[in-house]
Length: 228
Image (cartoon, rainbow, N blue to C red):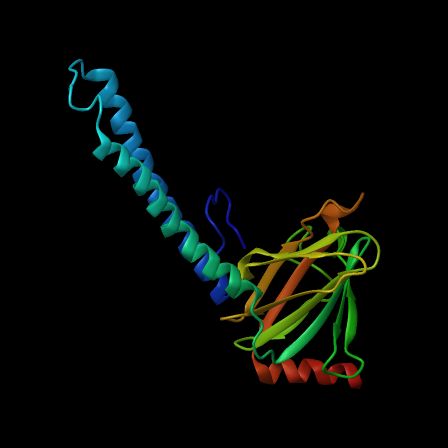
């Protein structure tokens, strides 16, 4: 969960999100260096009154300021492309969960098990317990085992939704008639909140997502409760 006044990302709960935060810091450092050099050059031009006649036709400096930005773009583009491919990679998923977006709630189907499916509605403010988050708590959380790869199959039944959990680095559109796929692995136990990130109608702000990561033994016990 973010804190009051927080201006940076939430703490990463998956390896992909950790790499996204690292790339953000890397890009911010490059941007800071570029802005520092440009600011120094502008200040020098405004303050310095001397003219160097050798700079009037300086092929060397023109070569430098053409090649240097290209190298900077490569330094940014290559890590970006690597992370882009990592986010779409689903190698050996342990569990597949089909997610269906409705107006205005989510449905989850655990296709590896029999009769494990549920609807997830936002908990009304009047029903919240002490410690629950308003507009983020749901009646049925999506429960997954931690440190195992989860494959999400995401679609919608009516309009376009977006299944988004910032701490996991996951944001996938749920499009009617289309099945999108993404994978993630939680690195630690906990409850990770998200919300629909598409403007999907009147109650768009009231279809939250709650992912609960637990150990494998507790997960199997949770699954067995559906068949009792």
